[in-house]
Image (cartoon, rainbow, N blue to C red; front, side, top):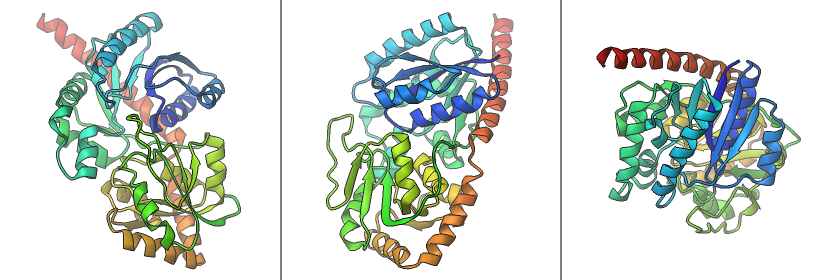
Amino acid sequence: MMKLLMTADTVGGVWDYSLELSTALGEHGVSVVLATMGAPLSESQWAEVRRIHNVSVRESTFALEWMPSPWSDVDRASEWLLDLERREHPDIVHLNGYAHGALPWRAPTVVAAHSCVRSWWEAVRGEQAPTEWDEYTRRARAGFDATDVIVTPSRAMGEAVRRHYAPATEPIVVHNGRAGPYRRGDKSHFVLTAGRVWDEGKNVAALVRVADAIPWPVYVAGSTVSPHKRVTALGSTQPLGKLPAAELAEWMSHAAIYALPARYEPFGLSVLEAALSGCALVLGDIPSLRELWGDAALFVDPDDHDTLATTITWLTEDAPMRRALSARASHVALRFTPARMATGYLEVYERAASAHALRTRSVACAS
């Protein structure tokens, strides 16, 4: 039986990804020690993870590398993680962050690149990340260079990693997968969006600006409070707050349209969830979402608010087009299953083990 030590943050989509992957790996006899950081697990998160038979949790609240002034916490987390490896003896270390890739791990390592500050800044602000992120960049590059295999959920994210960090190894694409409680229900006349509302990359602000111009109500699910404690105003939209997965799935099952005019979204788990729920998709016209959804969605320039409003309004008035888009999105969503994701990662873990063995032999010969 393979044993995995996997890091996960508790404040974003990596949490859902980690549970989905761990569950799917359990079908292959893989046990997972989940080392959590960022914030304490909520009651609903504990309830989720306790339902997964092959997962045990080691909880911490160390700050994540993209949070304000995180480096003392990142360094303390390094000691904690290395101690976990000594005690747990994993076959593979799977990191969902970058800085810790540079630690002196005994086991083969995989770094999964879900997003990064430099590519976020480029996409959202249209410029390079400021100098305050130089330490982040330095540590991320060191982590990428030291790891055995780098994984990204899309070709677009792989290109971003190559452009910003020039890693020693070529990233491998393994698409994320989603199952869970998502299903098509009786559709109602409302528009839904979901995610970290405070994240400018999600561009929920565009929906807020056009909500009054759309004939149907616009519901917004997700936290409005950033790690910096800034609160995002939601105007005339209908705020739902941060919902447990089962409640969000219920809302998605009834939403006729799911809108995410994102400026930055390396994969977009919420889009996949909406597609599994039979929603017609209106998405930001960015390379990653084009790559993944093709003709199964309508795409709008994230900064073109007039076109966003007219596109959604047109879709509210055209039931046959909504049904057609729903069917296309549901078909594409079948490509992104947890089983396929698990198979992809098992191949990655084998490659990491081979690369690690080769690197270890090379070091031994050199000495």
